[in-house]
Length: 362
Ligand code: NPG
Image 1 (cartoon, rainbow, N blue to C red):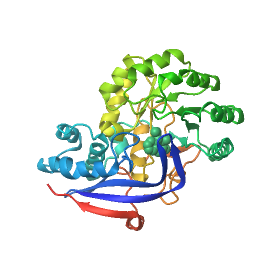
Image 2 (cartoon, rainbow, N blue to C red):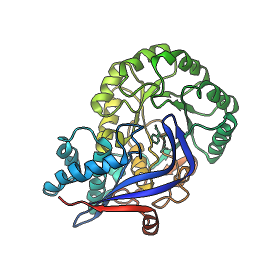
Image 3 (cartoon, rainbow, N blue to C red):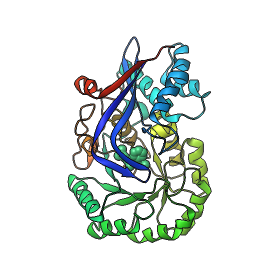
Image 4 (tube, protein in one colour):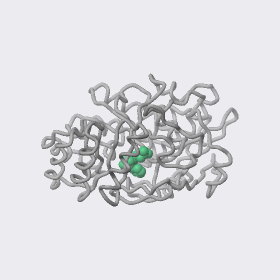
């Protein structure tokens, strides 16, 4: 088992309500079994600003608590990884990366694709794009115009207090028919209900995670005051959290990010729980390299994922992806069909971007 850190420069800085990223500092997990190699990508950011996890912390918990538990087991299979790691509370992004690596190795050994393993029903998936906070409304409109020309099928705008009604109005005026949604990343409180209500005028597909991750009941209260459907992201950390949020009326749509919920297998269980309750889901993104992107595209091809996800082309974030790039055509990406993730790091690129390699033993 190896933990690798790679530094991936972004094509443009990505600004959200919790900060600006210039380079994506990614933790990768490489597992080597007698039969195959497997890769996992941890979506934790450099700093604990999206959730409490962050890349150094994830590496620490993997090294100290998670990998040793796994290596102590005889030939762990991917479906058993989450059970084996359940004694460690939280740290879902770290657990998810480890499960992804084991799953990839297991599937490569049998020749099955991750898409098939997850139950994919599509060979291509529609792409949305997430657009960061801009320096000006003009700049935002230029970005959106560029993405629309590239063929993205829906656009998500990042919002925060002071950057919401005005930019959204400007984009809606310029792009009358564009499928549009917004994401607050928990930057608002219930006191902002009036400002958020003003967004009802712009025919948005959804308002994503306006309030804090633990403010589930407040989301339900807010939902009563808005016409725009609420979608939850940060609040949904497990099947239990998803079912509770839906039953409480806190969301009508769920963003599923495998890393946030502890892995692709839990992600599928959440999608099933949502489907049972007629709640549409879509696949979120965490600015993944081609490895995580491959897995996201496979997930997005499974039942219940009826809305375009943040499954953008590699070029949205990276001039040079770690794998063969994901290239969009007609606003869609092909679902990898090869064994496991269907992609591997390009050795020359990996060598160039790797900043540290740590071997972990049981
Ligand atoms: O397309 O990968 C992508 C990025 C999508 O905006 C996106 N992700 O809150 O959903 C989010 C946001 C994010 C990005 C969160 C980076 C954390 C880190």
